[in-house]
Image (tube, rainbow, N blue to C red; front, side, top):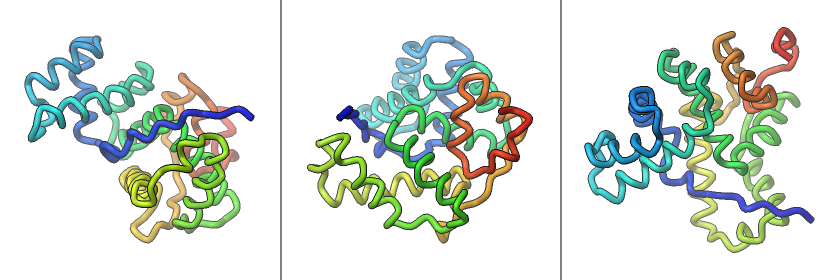
Length: 203
């Protein structure tokens, strides 16, 4: 059986909206992720309390934003707050296979089956189904498992894909968002609770 090494380092932060914008603007100026990382830490762009925290969050954000192409970064910098949040959701899903699969296999599938409530049980069942693909998941402490779940649900709320009661918000993607995403990968439109009939002009 093919196994995957699911990285779980996303617990260092949620969607990191404002901080991600700061890093994206630095990249627009320099064009070098290495320079961005060094400058962000040196100048404490993210206003972190400690050097270790500055390095950790900066590295986390850079690792996500590296998943975006120029068109998507342009939307991140110039788009509306909601468009920015959608792009950041795409970035984090591409960075973390575990979240990507959760978005496609649980969030989207629940929506298509008209099961609009996303429950903790949905997450727990998904997590358990992935244990066979990565033995390390089997050894994760219950407290860590709960933390991972908490962060993912917070990201979904910050991206406005879930409301405060964990009900799925149907998404209407602007043409700007769709054009940017499909310039990288059409399949990533599946990361949103949206009907394919609403995407016929692009698919």
